[in-house]
Amino acid sequence: MKRGALKARARDISVVLVVLVCATVGIWTWDSTPTAFLPPQRHFLKLDTEEKVERISTAQNTETKDSYSSATPFVNKEQSKEDHTDNKDTEEEKEKQVEEVSVSETNQGKTPPVEEKNLEQVEQEVIVSEPKHQKTPPTTSEESKLKKVKQEVSVGEAEAKTTHIEKTTQDQEKKTLATDEAKKDIKACNYAKGKWVVDKHRPLYSGSRCKQWLASMWACRLMKRKDFAFERLRWQPKDCSMEGFEGSKFLRRMQDKTLAFVGDSLGRQQFQSMMCMITGGKKRLHVLNVGREFGFRTPRGRARPGGWAYRFTQTNTTVLYHWSSTLCDIEPINISNPLTEHAMHLDRPPAFLRNYLHKINVLVMNTGHHWNRGKLNGNRWVMHVNGAPNANRKLAALGDAKNFTIHSTVSWVSSQLLNHPGLKAFYRSLSPRHFVGGEWNTGGSCDNTTPMSIGKEVLQEESSDYSAGHAVKGTGVKLLDVTALSRVRDEGHISRFSISAKRGVQDCLHWCLPGVPDTWNEILFAMI
Ligand SMILES: *[C@@H]1O[C@H](CO)[C@@H](O)[C@H](O)[C@H]1NC(C)=O
Ligand SMILES: *[C@@H]1O[C@H](CO)[C@@H](O)[C@H](O)[C@H]1NC(C)=O
Ligand SMILES: *[C@@H]1O[C@H](CO)[C@@H](O)[C@H](O)[C@H]1NC(C)=O
Image (cartoon, rainbow, N blue to C red; front, side):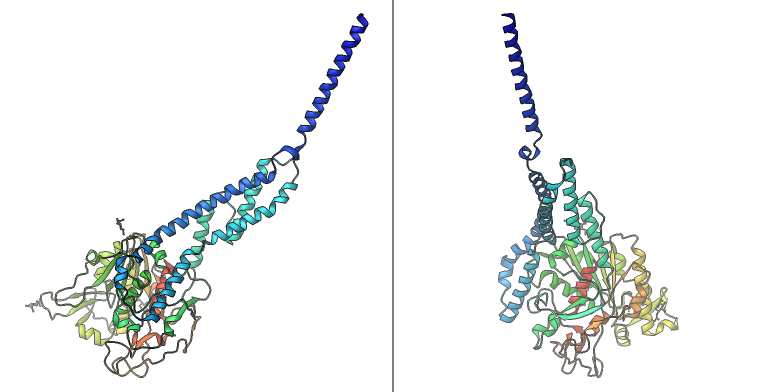
């Protein structure tokens, strides 16, 4: 009996043992089959990619939202009563043109940011790279795989952006760097070199519709002129691309800031051009007259104030123009005598600049065509230096006096840059005249109507305005060099079509608007 019981027990134990061994082997086999039960790596990759994509697209949405939210008021304003009551323009052709302009504007505004394309590329890249990762040996830990994918995504991004920025872990950092780098590239460009090209998306506004800002004496669409090919030209810099002007972009960049044009009537043209460019020639933005904040009142007995200042309330952006034809300080010698002579202080900047520079963020100065005997004598201006009538023979010649003043004012503004860290100052070079066969008062004319017939390209490195180029050298003031590029635009003047000019008197000094000064503003926009 004892033997039989023992045998049975041994059998029981061995059965239990066999079962145990089998179970262990089974569980071990089960456990060591990686592909069957682990979640597919694809899923991990996807999760990570999705997270990444989501992060990028969130950033994009913020950007897009920003641009839309600032663009929205434009649309709302466009539909406002103001606009409807004002649209009585019957000229269909012009309407069409405006339509065209606004369509191209809208398209520009809605084109998806370049990054969106990059994102697609990144996504593709990840998908393409997936199989590779699945073949990686199982010894690679999940974490290192994720890292690899992340790196690859970053590489894709960087490549897509075609920047030479070193890989950093922080995308944010990378983005900032990229923008700075791009800006530097743009700033290094000499926009004065390039050529004129025909562009069907020009002009940037309608010369017949921008009545609110454009003086009728410069609106050639309101005259008998019939050729408008000159409105279709766009300046294309040679070695760099120029950022396209958009009113909404300008306003955003100039949020809470002031742009001031200080100079002669050509400066005023640039100012009016800028107002039309910002608004697209439409009454759709809320604008306040803030001339009083800059002391612009019409003095007794004068037809005009010393300038105009307007504020776009949406972004708190102010654009102003101050009349200073010689860019130096002019003051009456005997204030109680209405017929008094005026001291023209060649070595002192205009009082306006001394008083208001602290309120200006972007300053554009110019002078040029008022430096002639007729203007000086007519205005009873007497040159002064050092607070006394000029005794220096070398400065008596008008060209030298002008050169001296440009140098004095530019170097004074440059000296003020330290006290005004936010200030960007420009000196706009001479706007060329195109009188042929005489002067403005001796039968000079500019009858050419064919664009680019005297040339279309500028390749020189130095400015054609020697004095201006020399004055800004070594200062913090930048040159807005428009001389050479405007010189080949002899067809763009008001010519014989001027509303106010007497018979036979042509204006080959001022430009039709829209026209050449729009380009000066496009370059300015690219430089700020
Ligand atoms: C507008 O901008 C000026 C600076 O140019 C600032 O002093 C002022 O507070 C701003 N106004 C508003 C309402 O933001
Ligand atoms: C200034 O002009 C007034 C009025 O013509 C005259 O009476 C006065 O003498 C002048 N003053 C000087 C310093 O010339
Ligand atoms: C213009 O003025 C500056 C400074 O006074 C001087 O250095 C320069 O030679 C002048 N240029 C000409 C053409 O007279």
